[in-house]
Length: 234
Image (cartoon, rainbow, N blue to C red; front, side, top):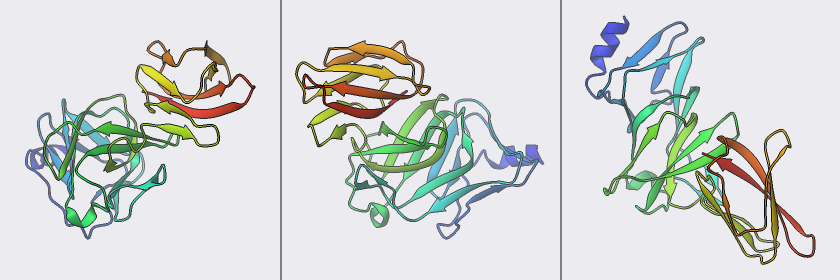
């Protein structure tokens, strides 16, 4: 059975947009995408760098929702994919295809948005192709994916607290975190179990040595006013 599915996936698999569950894998079964093959589910293309197996201990489905997510008060495109079994080690290219009907006010300056259910956090990955109507990103296997959609570039890039005019960016961050809007401020960064991992009085903070995960940044001004941010380290 698995060999038959693998052979089938050497060719694009197209499914109609009316399907609310474009892919279902029954309990105990697996679906293999061969290296260099592309699985196309209603316009979401998965092309792994090496053979990739989709499987589930229980019945697993890929869902399609034709409504937008609202992120930082901005709506995404109105096509959102969900994974019952999160893609946790996918290394390869994902292409999100869209048309005018689902753009939902978003222009062609786009990014992929990926939701990690374990940290309840959305992350933004800028489009790597120069074409309209496709959003492409090559993942390295370190990004857990529970949902996937597309939207405007930099929708998630700046986390801002309007009460004090403080902003941090980019967020998610892979290396350097910038803090703007305050002079003479101090910052403390805490991990998910409340341990202080970093203190700084600089407007740029080097996070290269930190592990991936969710952190809490507390920025304090000279009057002891504090502003909190949830930071995702990629």
